[in-house]
Length: 338
Ligand SMILES: Nc1ncnc2c1ncn2[C@@H]1O[C@H](COP(=O)(O)OP(=O)(O)O)[C@@H](O)[C@H]1O
Ligand code: SF4
Ligand SMILES: [Mg+2]
Image (cartoon, rainbow, N blue to C red; front, side):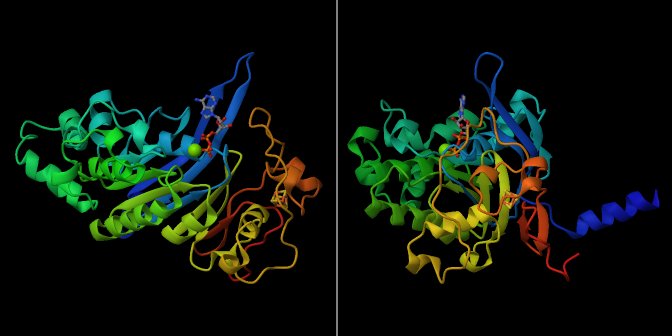
């Protein structure tokens, strides 16, 4: 009884994360009884107003994590909590309502928009699916406000169809559609990767200012180190379906300790990377198959520091210092960190 009360008090003192996931596992069937081990025990949390970046090369499971978070499809195992509500196991109607509080922005804005619909209808798609009885109240004003919020002129774009807009404008329409539902969490999966370089910075700037102004939490997924580093408060680095390091983005180039994160940072131009470190790993070899991941540490086949232990035991994700977690047998917690 006493211990229950103590736990409850302790939980009240720490505000729950806006979004958290525990031990997500996603495996895709690959024929002949084989499985793609796309995501293998990933946990994360995102505080209110925080941006968590998910970084890793193509095929490491970033999009699968993003989809598991919004339960489309739900993970094979593991739990997702949004604002204290566990999404896993909700009835379909409840899940749909909860999902409206977490919106996703995809990589290819053109294919994310129904080509036959006009911008005004595309932006209103959310309320028309999730809306309550008063969904049409102030509809035109809300559509125009949403378009203005993302830097589009309503009079110019309202009646247009996606093919009459640029890629950047289409992504703004996707963002307007998501924000109109007033979500608490935005999941952005490579939101600028398909856009011209000249437009990328504008969309990143829009996402950054919008989330800050609204106090929105964001999960920002990308393979580009400098993009993730610049927009995120914390960065979670993934390799072959596992988390290898979670650390603050500020000073990441000096603080990163996992050999894979060091390798990613070594791929940045010198000006963005800061001073190099002795022992930075060589450029990457091929990613092993997620059908048959290496035993022990999944990074061991490419790691310059690998030892026998690395093939025998999986390194746990450990706190190295406050706010910094690393999964590597050869990175020790700071001595005064317990
Ligand atoms: N629907 C699917 N069916 C089978 N394999 C998939 C499917 N989606 C993704 N994969 C595989 O799962 C792994 C992780 O993919 P993904 O999450 O898309 O990675 P990322 O977004 O980091 O590029 C990859 O090996 C990919 O080929
Ligand atoms: S556990 Fe071993 S193989 Fe894995 S990153 Fe650390 S040193 Fe490299
Ligand atoms: Mg992806």
